[in-house]
Length: 116
Length: 110
Image 1: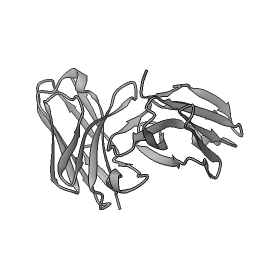
Image 2: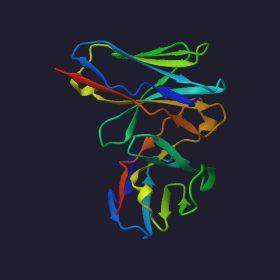
Image 3: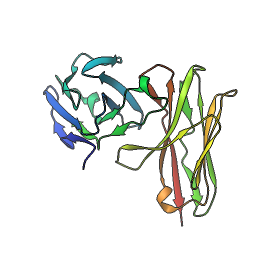
């Protein structure tokens, strides 16, 4: 029944490590997103994919690399983790906003990343 | 000026009160407006879209003022379960990029 799922839910790792977060949606949406929510609760978009093509790549260090193997999946790989990467990472999906007058984003439960 | 600004609060209100939040946006090309709700340690969820003519969903009323570039959310007869952070979201026409405000925290107490 889960619409947007992410794994893992919690991730504790040391500086310098490489880690991946996976996201899957079963809503038939063609657009997926990665957001970062920091300790001040500010939700900032990082990447967006539409039909497996990257359409948004905000100012994000190139240690972060998204990969979309198909429309239903968007993974996030992070190299050489830093303390400042500690945050909650949310995956979201929606229909292509260009095709609808208004659209709703459905968010996954989030991955709480702690870098020590 | 930030693209989307909200008073972070917290707004502390008793059960049954009416409370209103505003959100201002800076880009006049903005075309789509939404209110999301985020409970503590949970994901954001759409509360309601905001239409030009204003819209109501039960105890919640959303309004848009294009001239002054703000949207508002009114909650009537507040319940304890309304306690959450309310996020204003604005999207420019033809853009895939939604911009979230930092959110307004609401605490409803008995």
